[in-house]
Image (cartoon, rainbow, N blue to C red; front, side, top):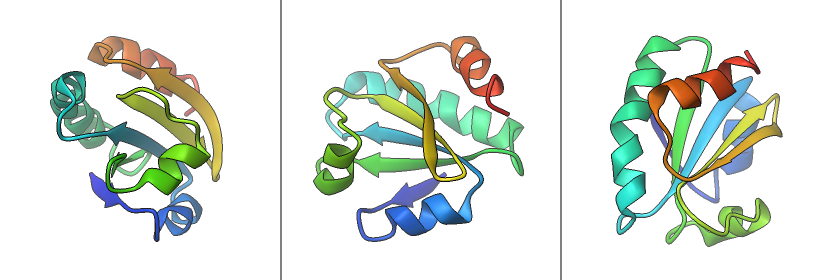
Length: 103
């Protein structure tokens, strides 16, 4: 998983056809719960889906731009455009069901 920053966010969107961004924070319990699930999904979908993590406390500009009001928020970008938004922790099967609809 890539660590995303405000400065390089737009570049990452352009460099990845399908990018799932995990908007999270260190103090967020549910964010920590889904981290291993996202790592599993990244391994299983390698070459098809890239997953990046953006710490909302350190990268407020991007979080504000995409109106992230609560975390974890996962936004799936397809060719640079947001196509799916999921708020809150979810099971692996629920995440995959939502993501695979856009593959």
